[in-house]
Image: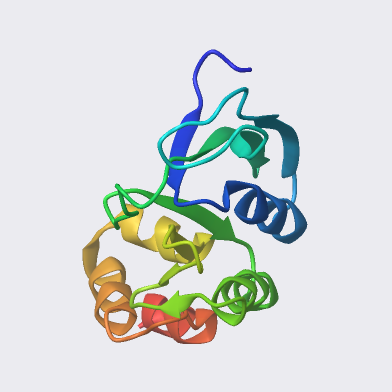
Length: 157
């Protein structure tokens, strides 16, 4: 186990989430599944207690802790994409697998984890500031999935 990992709380299906992430994103994997050595408040001996997994090179853990805590937008994975095909692929995988669209490139997977599927050009233009950043920001605000052609057009003015 890495010294520092992101730990996500799941009701009871951390392994399914980790398998989905590993199948969806590059440099991602399900690394270890740990079973409960004894009964615990929200599970029984032998049930999956926690998993270790990697998402785009970032070490994560998932704990099956029961229904006590829910995911929130206060935490999200920000995945920077290179083109519309990559943006569409990740967005459609998350939303199409029981997830939910939000706005400005945000969506939630079926486990309630928030994702920002964000084209690199959007981040780069916003970081430069000035009128291009303002225009890009204004066209991004009503979007759900980010449309790169519209972002590029706004950046050019």
